[in-house]
Image 1 (cartoon, one colour):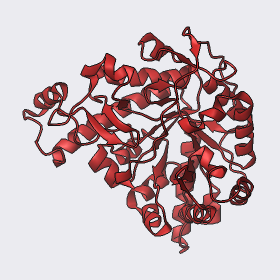
Image 2 (image 1 turned 90 degrees about the horizontal axis):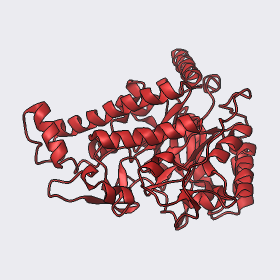
Image 3 (image 1 turned 60 degrees about the horizontal axis):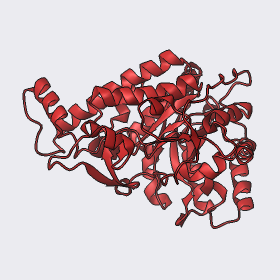
Length: 420
């Protein structure tokens, strides 16, 4: 699948180049047809009441398939909780219960199976990345795995509240993330894995003893006092990129068709403030698709991000989309604005993904019927990303842990407000 997506993206780039030579402005209808338009939606912790109930989950997937979506991004790691029966978590004693659905089912396994049956890609979303709740079992069990700010501070404020950050440069942290990712891609036969803007590190961090010693050993100097120092930013960003490169190779060894999806913030913010050099990930072939989070409240602040050079470069290499905020409980989004953004994306040959499922038609100012009808108009033409002959999902063995109802999950994480 990954090879097929790359081939289609390359064909798209060639056709777009040819249209430009003919003097047409922007991708033609023919060029847009070269690769399926990415039409995705995130299924967040707030969507768990739907996902945990078997019949509601099946109805939701059927609705999305009928509306001609083609990709689902369900959360599998959020708030120190694995939203599936994880042997990795159980073996490390990071969770005192096994997450299951209301009917005792493996929520992730059944969602993958239902998505496949309906012709949708299911790419689980590794939401928290290197971020960890400060009071999580992970942070308490391995305090030496946490990185620090220069003043010794262990936490920062995020959309999830006060959080700690796992040290992305420590081998133990890298191994934990690798094991979790390979469990989802390998054991579950998922179509891929998605990393978002938290597969990163706020630039204020990296002053813990382990990282300071590593920097001294490699450069002969102490880390600069200024966390925004260009060389210090690059050294840390390059380390994260190197880990992502190794991780991507392991994912592809486990499943050559797995799609490695990346949903970061816009590039200047991601690199300078979060040490996430996603453009290097695109250039090095680490990422198979890109969804840039642009959660702007109006069109004028949204449009400039669609024509950024790094977005154009990515679009020429891999399937690329701009992610749209479809609404939140305290901030509904009108359907007319969503339609304008979808049209703007298409004018630039970009796909679309919505954050998040519940707000697609249940939290808007219009009725659910009106919003579903609008989605049906926008996505009237089919855009399948899955072959009808796709293999079935491997049988998932149940975890040894006791099944129990989990605590109330944390809220989903939109892009941090400072990046908006």
